[in-house]
Length: 113
Length: 161
Image (cartoon, rainbow over all chains, first blue to last red; front, top):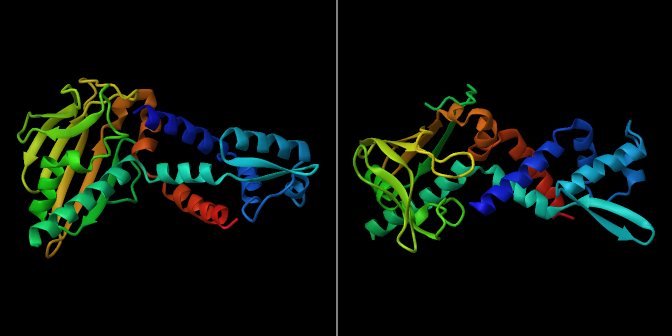
């Protein structure tokens, strides 16, 4: 259960981070690939320092990673964080019932053969 | 039958269609829980869990069995109606420790839906008994529809990088 709890805490942090609309918008801007702070802030009604602050929270939540490209710092979505969220989003009962379904159908097939 | 449109913060409802006869679905759920329950993650005892057991009568125990022979109670059987309805109490607190006073309830209905097909409906209710931690627990038990869709699209985007 420790693993499940650690996951729950991590997920809680990620969902909290994405609860802020501006931060969500910043996160969305990384969908198409890595971006610098300047590229993220361009066209947004948010200052670069504010964007940096949002990026910091997203990074702490395990949702994004930073890559250093020469003198530039590029921010990108962390696929590991997304995967953890997606797995968890299936939920306790979804996961458990899906496992049950598989076992019941296997049993059905065996009893038929 | 399951009205997803009404939000009740004190319960989580799920349904799944299983390609198995009603009695087969019932037996796998009740007699063979240890073969499918994700024991690696969802267990509460100190020992590695090797089985999950539902005693087949009203008032029976629902527990996990550890590899060292120890058992750890999850709840009790509140209703035992083969092959259509099972009600269990879920007495595991928000800290994933046994709490016999908790008494949240899980009702499972097995509805025959054709030739070797069964719709299994599950309701986990009385989540208000988690008190201040209800919302947190609800999120763990439930899925979050909009978040799920949103994140699937993010995941696709992330994988495409």
